[in-house]
Image 1 (cartoon, helix red, strand yellow):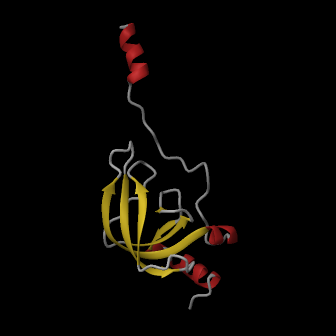
Image 2: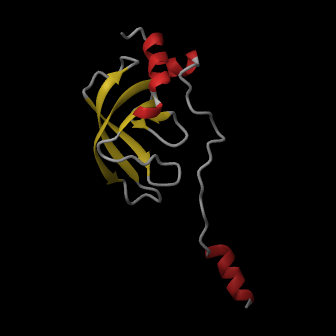
Image 3: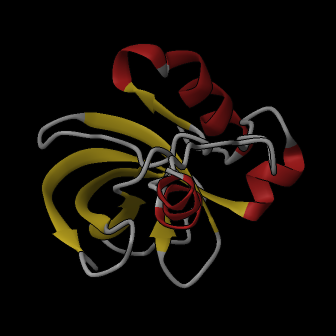
Length: 135
């Protein structure tokens, strides 16, 4: 019986959960967040699981950019990545979202980052248009 508990202790499964305690989601009211992140809206064109050999794979979403608020993406479509783990953002093809992504090599989104569906984003879109001087 002792052997069972020893084996369970060393080889038992464990659960990983998402915590956003390391940082706050970017805020469209914060000038530093506006500067340090890409802000864009668009529709999900496709999604594909990638990096499946990793403990938590990734989902690659192709997004048709409707508005590039920060003016830095310079593309009609972008690839955006999210985790298949508990922090990953779940989106479906055809959905429209407003996003922020930290300025890195690849665009990543998670439940810890700013994101909003169209029906919930009206006020934030107005703030972004005002800040970035978009009509």
